[in-house]
Amino acid sequence: MEVIILGSGTSQGVPMIGCRCAVCTSADPRNKRTRTSVHVVMDGLHIQVDAAPELRIQCVREGVERLDVFILTHGHSDHLTGMDDLRRFCDMRDGGALTVHTTPEGAERVRAIYPYAIADRAEIRGYPAFRLREMPALMELPQGTIASTLLPHGSTQTLGLVFTERSTGRRFAYYTDCKSLTEESIELAKGADAMVLDGLRPLPHPSHMSIGEAVESAARIGAGRVWLTHLTHLTDHAATEAGLPKGIYLAHDGLRIYI
Image (cartoon, rainbow, N blue to C red; front, side, top):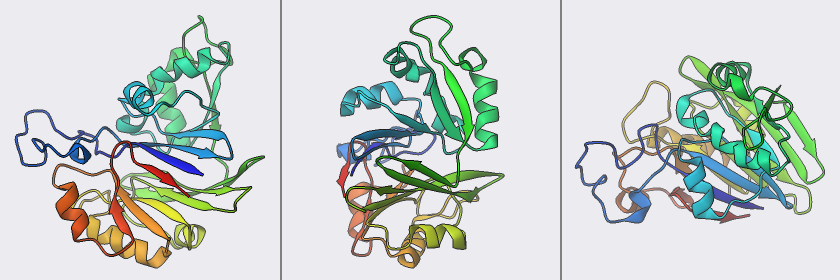
């Protein structure tokens, strides 16, 4: 299994507009963060999770040229406003719709923002087309399974995902944008080979886990390796990662994780 971190930044991105702090002006490329999304390749199946505003740039930069399954974790703008750029993948299907697996809240937001794309086929060749489906608790595919669970994220809920590759049995958990983990989500991800987990910033936040809270949650899950994502400009990559416990790291744009 291969995991490509397309984006590791918060909703404002890093550097932020008009900010001259040490992280926003850093020469370390790991401190340059586009909005959070991930691409998972499981036994050759290409799964895209979320569509950040920079999706087109992310895909071109990382050589993502195929998409078989699309999952939207929730309906916040930093995770879905790149969906219009999924039109290229619809075009590769001869205009056929991409199925969007998401929550009811996510589906409502997609309908509101992309009414022109809700169809089984693109209205005009080159346009996007989306077929909305609620993400099941367990998606079974020839290449493996994707289990989902709901995580608290402020006034809404977001999808936590656990991928299990059929040929290897390797497991990868992806829990972004959450304030805490439920007991169900901990059991689902327990002992995963690798995990990417929300760890917004050193300071507490009402709808995201802080870095300290993420470290505590990671200890309960016991994944082999853990990367924190959705990082703000309050987190310098090198300095923060040096202070993390063994086996916990910071994600960065372009990171490739082989499991």
